[in-house]
Structures are given as C-alpha cells and as structure tokens.
Length: 85
Ligand code: SF4
Image (cartoon, rainbow, N blue to C red; front, top):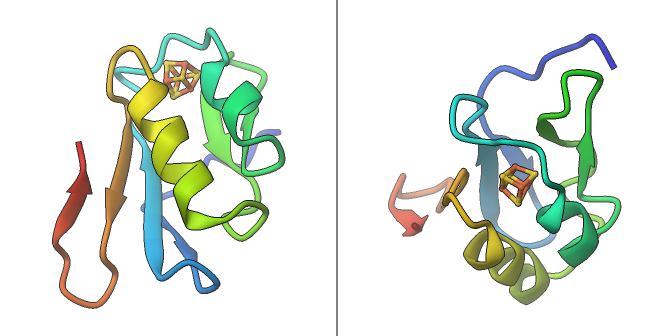
C-alpha cells in the first residue's frame, strides 16, 4: 500500500478516530492480531488503519492498549479528547 494516510481515520460506527504514530510503530503486528481488518501492516512494516469500522470500539481500544509502544492514538472526533493513551 503506497498511500500513506494523513491524519486520523474516523470510525463512524464507534465514534472514535484512530491514528497510528508511524514514528513509534515498529511493526510487530500485535494490533493486526487484536483487531484484524482494522489494522494492516504496509510495505514499510508499519501499521495503517485500513477499515476503522471493521471491529467494535472495545476491540479497537484493547488493540491500542495492547500496542507495546502506545503507537495507536484514539481520540473522540467530536471533542478532540484523547481517549488513549
Ligand atoms: S501493535 Fe503497535 S507497534 Fe505493533 S504494529 Fe501495531 S501499532 Fe505498530
């Protein structure tokens, strides 16, 4: 995938915005295991959000919490409040 996504991906279903910090992500893929179809590793072995609506909110929040380097940032798109980390 060559299109690097700029900015957070909005999950309308879950009312959250999801962004991967590419500087932090080291590409081990825990998030892909935790929330398949939401995250995928790109050709630089960095996680990207491919479908922010593919899993429910709890699953995505757990995936963010499981990221060993806290590279997954979850925000409330309405208030801008950071929900994780
Ligand atoms: S779990 Fe974190 S470090 Fe690992 S691929 Fe996902 S975003 Fe990157």
